[in-house]
Each structure stands twice: as structure tokens, then as C-alpha cells.
Amino acid sequence: MRRYTLNWLMVALPVAFALLISLKPCCGKPTGKGCSETVDVAIVGGGIGGAYSAYNLRNKSLKIGVYENSDRLGGRYYTEHLANVPDQNIELGGMRFIKTAHTRLYKLIKDLNLKTEVLLNADSDSYESRVFRRNVSMTSSEYKTGQVPFNLTQEEKDNQADLLRYVFSKLTNDSLKNLTEERLFQLTVPDGRKLYQLSVVEALNLAASSEAKCYLLLQNHFNSAEIAATDMVYNYFGSHGQVYTGSDVLTVSEGMSSVVERAFEQFLNANSKHSLKKNRRLVSIRERKGKYRYKLTFKETVTADGRTQDLHHWRSNNIVCAKRVILAIPMFALSKINWAPLRSRHFTDLLLNTFKVHASKVFMTYKSPWWLEDTKYPTRTLQASGLGSALGANKVTPPLKDYLYDRLALAFGIPRCSIPEPLSAIAGFWIKYPYGGGWVLTRPGYTFDDIISGFRRPSDRHDVFVVGSDYAARDVTGWGEGALMTAESVLEEFFQNPLGHQQ
Ligand SMILES: *[C@@H]1O[C@H](CO)[C@@H](O)[C@H](O)[C@H]1NC(C)=O
Ligand SMILES: *[C@@H]1O[C@H](CO)[C@@H](O)[C@H](O)[C@H]1NC(C)=O
Ligand SMILES: *[C@@H]1O[C@H](CO)[C@@H](O)[C@H](O)[C@H]1NC(C)=O
Ligand SMILES: *[C@@H]1O[C@H](CO)[C@@H](O)[C@H](O)[C@H]1NC(C)=O
Ligand SMILES: *[C@@H]1O[C@H](CO)[C@@H](O)[C@H](O)[C@H]1NC(C)=O
Image: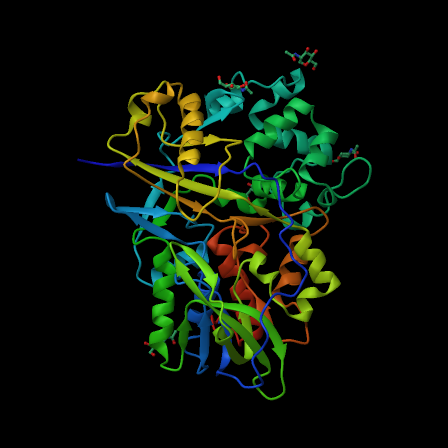
């Protein structure tokens, strides 16, 4: 019997944001002066940013140590399998990429001899999402051009098909066609302020009716009203955006985690001095005398049922002494490290002005695809806003299932009791340490360059670098490509350009 998976049911948690940054130094006293290990480069983080850094430095006659907090490699690439559908990759995190836009990732996948397959065919409309807004179920095209449950003004109705562009064009007196990054940060609003100094909601308040504001915010339900207006404008109208439209969306046949696993495998094979240790959480960085200038204190952790915790034992501290350090960790984990440069005014401002998006995913499998057969609105993908849930490592709790079933019944126009029980279920939550959220967006007041250069090297005096998709900005924040882009920029500038690109 074939089993079907209802996936891509994205659940945006209603929690707008949480102040996730603790300014207090964390736990952990360094145990004496000695080093339990010395390395040329310490790479902290076993996700795609750490894997790409390790992979590209693997043959450079350096002794490299990699340290991962949990017992799993992959970070936000997290492929799972359910017993009843063993052939189906369940991507709890990043699940896809676009060949023409994510060129570094595509090259890496090819170099690692992994296979790719089409996840969404650009020419097929069978995948058109339905949207469920204000209790009304519509196709995406109906949402764009049909009757919608929003009281738009006549002018807004006349421009409904391209309302976001219309509103921002009017506000900035710019066509927003072929928008380059340079022009983006020059855009001004009538009172003379630069658009990047305004949040999305501030900008919409100036240029749209309150109903149009709701309509547009719900259309972008994964973004936040509090992020910089330029982030949203660039995502839709940036000159790069052309490559996204009309492209197939691909995935890795072996699962997205395999990119990370295979890159680390080749890293370890390249030099017997390299090492990779799991269940090590970085607590602090201290400067020391000598050529191994950085003393990194790690706490040993233990992972059970997908949850990773510190091993509470005084012997659980490990000291790694390193000449250089690459922190390939999410921003939330970075904010918890005890190291003076991360407490500077400038760095603290940057950390506080980011926004961690509380996205999660729920997968449920069924005997047959009821959402295509027995519903008023058969569809493969559904976007619904305002779904909320309790949290818990990978478990779909009964209250969460009940809540989702209520919403699914409304969205598909069927009685709740006609939705069959799932055969199996799994959820991916990204709110907890070390992630803090699915991805990171930026509040108003910063250019993309402020973000990228601000995070890359927290202090010019130190050979400690930061890479990862949380620090990528532009259109690749939240994508694996963003992690590769930031890693590449660090490697090219501070590690003799191992990728061999022209500078
Ligand atoms: C949507 O429908 C449900 C159930 O019929 C109802 O409880 C809820 O108030 C409705 N919400 C809106 C915004 O109309
Ligand atoms: C829609 O908005 C207009 C003003 O733009 C208002 O006059 C009208 O009463 C509103 N209709 C509804 C159904 O709220
Ligand atoms: C809008 O831009 C045009 C040129 O593109 C310019 O002629 C016009 O004065 C501008 N309007 C305002 C209000 O700035
Ligand atoms: C935008 O770029 C395309 C191709 O790069 C070009 O054909 C088009 O004329 C440009 N449009 C504007 C408004 O500059
Ligand atoms: C790295 O070294 C391995 C052998 O250790 C070799 O097979 C491979 O071609 C090298 N790769 C690069 C990019 O130098």
C-alpha cells in the first residue's frame, strides 16, 4: 500500500518575538591553564556553515578540530525517516534549493557526488498552494486577483494583482524594477527618511489602508511586521529575484543532511590530524599567551530523544586551544558565548536588532491522500497563518494535533471527524538552543553590508570569525546558500582563499 505524506504544512507560531539574548555570562569555569587539545583552526558547529568551512580547508596542511553541540551533524539540515515510510525524506529543516540562485550549494552537492531531484516543477500548476485567510480558502491566484475577505479601497483593488509593488512604488516614487542593492538603500519616503529606517508596518502605515496592510502582511506570513521594509522589498523586487522565478525547486535525493555528513566525511578523510567531536557545547573563549592564542571551553553534553543537555559534572569541561576560530553557529548560540568582543556595544546592538522567526514544521502520514480526494479544496500545499502550537522535541503532541486538525478542517472545508488519524507524525521545532528560530531577519536601520561585515569578525584584533545563514542578509538569509556565502567570504579573506576564486 502506498503511503502519503502531508508535508509543507508550515506552522508560524504566533509568538512575535522573544528577547532571547542573555547578557549575563554563562556557566563554566575554565579548569586550569592547560589545553586538553591544540588545533590550528577550531570550527564550532556541525551544520552546513561548519561543514563547508572544514571541507574547503581540509587539504591546507592545517590541523582542524570540529565541535558540535548535539549528537547529530546537519544543523538546520535535518533529514529524518519514519518507520512506515522509510523511503520518504522528512526534512525537518531546510528542504530545498534553487540551482540558479544557490550556485555555491549546487556546486558543493555536485562535488560531493550527491544526486538532486525536482521537488517543485516550475511549469506545473498542480502544486499551486491554497491560502487560508480570515476563514476563507482560496488559491494563490484567487488571492491575488479574485474576491478576497479584505475591504480594499478601489485604488487598491485596481492594483490587487501587484499590490505590494504598487504600495511601495507609490511610497518611494520608484518603479522598483530591476532594483539593485545600491538603489534599494537610497530609496526614500516623502518625509525624507530612508526606507531602510522603517519597519514593514511603518512603511505600510504610510502607504496603504489598514485592510491592505493586513492583506499584505498575511501574504508574507513568515516575515514580520517589525523587520526592515527594505528586506521585504528586496525579497520581492531585488534584481537577483529574477533567478527565482521560473526555476525548478530542487532537493537532495539522499536528504539535505547528507550534504553536511558527506562534506565532513571528506574533511576527515583528507588528513588524519583532523577531528570531529560531537556533544561539545562552546561556553567561553579566552585569550592566552603563546601561538595557540584562544582557549575555548567546551562543556560535554548528552543527547536523548532529540534533546541535548549539559552533562552536569565538573569534569565535563574540555579546553581546546586554537590559533584561529570559526564560529559556525546560529545567532542565538553566539549570543550565549562568554567572550568580551561579543559584549561590545556595537555587537550587542546588532544582536538585539535581529528577529528570530519562530517557524516549525509538522509532518503526518496517511494511508491515502485525503487532502486530494475527499475535500472541498483538494490541494497539495496549504499556507495558513496564525496556527499556533505547543513546543516539544519532534513530538506531535495530542493538543498540537487537535489544533492542527481544527484548522485543516476549516481550510479544506470538511468536517474535522472526516480527517483520518495519521499513521505517524513528526514535528521540527527550531525555537530552542542553539537555534532560537528557523531563520533570522533584521530590524530597521541596517544595510545588508552593516550586517554582513558587522558579524563576520566581531573584533579586528582577533582571529575569530562568524559564519552561517543567520548572518547572510540579502536574499540568502535563512538559506543554506547564506551559510556558504558567509563562509566563503571568511575563507577568501582570512584563510588564503582556499576556494581559489578571483578576488
Ligand atoms: C472562523 O471560523 C471558526 C469556526 O467556524 C470561528 O470560530 C471563528 O470565529 C472564525 N474566525 C473568523 C476570523 O471569522
Ligand atoms: C470598507 O471600507 C470603506 C472605506 O474605505 C467603508 O466605507 C466601508 O464601510 C467598509 N466596508 C466594510 C464592509 O467594512
Ligand atoms: C518622482 O520621480 C520623478 C522621476 O522619476 C520625478 O520627476 C518626480 O519629481 C518625483 N516625485 C516626487 C514627489 O518626488
Ligand atoms: C531590467 O533588466 C532587463 C534585463 O536585464 C532589461 O531587459 C530591462 O529593460 C530592464 N528594465 C528596466 C526598467 O531597467
Ligand atoms: C585533497 O586531498 C585528497 C587526498 O588527501 C585528494 O584526493 C583531493 O584531490 C584533494 N583535494 C583538493 C581540493 O586539493
